[in-house]
Image 1 (spheres, helix red, strand yellow):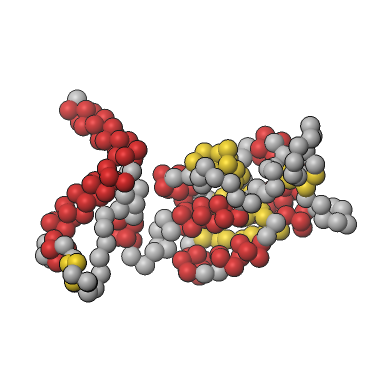
Image 2 (cartoon, one colour):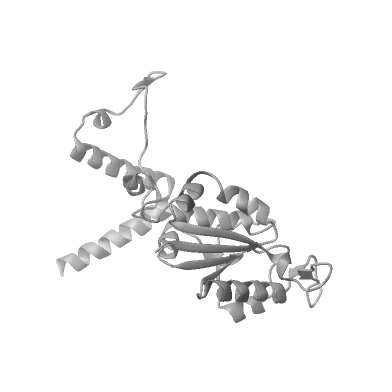
Length: 242
């Protein structure tokens, strides 16, 4: 069964433009995923299509109102006849990782609400049970880019989406490590040659070389990942000894 992802946003045209390109376009053509952006203003009831208001307690900026968001969520639930996992893009949410992408790829229906302005009325989270997810510790003007980041990371993991499923095994973070160095033609470029192991034709040697390089690369560039990977492997080793 294919995955459905609905996105509630103030800028559906920006979302749709990206959804209609590259891997996401092909995934939809293959019916591996159904992607749709919904304009939040379509779920307002006043003549001005108001989606925001001043925050209680004062302070700068505006806050997205709960009414149109809840109407949009309920409409999608009733229209699809399903109960999607609701995700709210938020700087205060759980950090989005490759592990999280794998987890979300196993869902049947995701509904992403794009934050905007100073944030979303807190009652939306309570009333929808939304998961808050952040793509990093920095501030953007809205949740459209985080939504697209999550969508692409999730969709490319769906079976049959990528032309070469084996490429997933070389992705960074696939098993907690960064991906190994990659090379293509020419064999020598400005005096720098492709490592001999990759030219050997020996698949076991190539796999061993890539693994060693991934470990060294992770240790040098991401010591935080390296420590986590080491701890996991030590834990597995202890369990196997028992």
